Every structure is written in C-alpha cells, then in structure tokens.
Image (cartoon, rainbow, N blue to C red; front, side, top):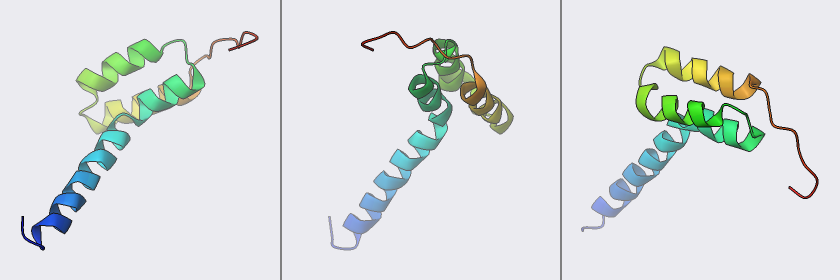
Length: 74
C-alpha cells in the first residue's frame, strides 16, 4: 500500500464500522435496556431493516419496549 492508500483504507474501515453500528442501533438499544422483545428486534433488524421505515420502527420499538425486571445480583 502506498502512503495515500492507507488513510483511504482506514477511512473506509471506519465508515463500515460506523454504518454497522448505526444499522444495528435498535438491537443495541434493546439489549442495553433488556427489552423482552430483543430477540425479535435482532431478527427483524438483521433481515428486514434495509428499509428506512422499518429501521425507524425498530428503533422506536427498542426504545419503548417493556423491559425485564431486574433481579438482585444481575
């Protein structure tokens, strides 16, 4: 790799990582909040969130879903 290709490759890698994070943001929120439907959110996010409307629907669902009760020690 030449000196000019390395920054471009690094930028491309950072863009891919950022896009992955944004794409799976509803899933990350659901798991962080311990939403009961987090498995469904992951499933839909993985296979069907390519449409922006569904992605926003999943983001809303993850943010407002019922959460599991915290048990002592967890």
